[in-house]
Image (cartoon, rainbow, N blue to C red; front, side, top):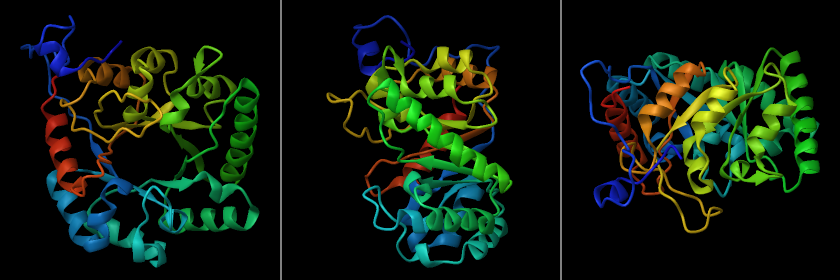
Length: 296
């Protein structure tokens, strides 16, 4: 595997290092860092513009937005009054902060019916994003289910491309479980062409299923446009949501991961600190500093 706990390392229970010792020829990780909006929604609801300014001054270059109306009342957490804000005005405020924004997350159910799909596409255009990133797709439980999901994604992709938009998909935790010996994510990669689907690899989702991301990145270069950067710890039940952990404080071996991401031509590195602590903004700022300290 590509990850191992720091505690196991210290106690001598495993033989690989989480973060190998710094070497003189290594360079600090220097890719531009983005932030995922859902994890900092509490801060945004309190002070949208001030939070954006804080992110920019810290060094973040961009923000991955979300369809605020699509998350209204969601068990994942919603955006309160921001769900009623004019998306064009939100785009202006983001631009005024100095942050970039070219992608937004949408609940998959927003594309289940034509009226809601049209509303979602209009929202994406008003936000002036290029990519619609789905989350919350129906969990497949068989190869036939994978076929059906692939068919649905192709239909959504065709519709979005006709609108000048690209389909992306967040790799939710349950999409890393294996069916017929292969993770669902890999099943989808084998069924859809690169122009039909760009994937967003979420590191938190791999950990519970003990998936090694490096061989997947190497096998499918160019297929993962985004990567959600957060550490994690193994849960007793892989179906239990694993809160984010600041990089370096969990089980992920960051050097091989970030090297593989570079080889795989990942375009955007997105901090995603969904900790459920109520302090996600502070955690995100710590994550930024932690990532900048990693030698690759």
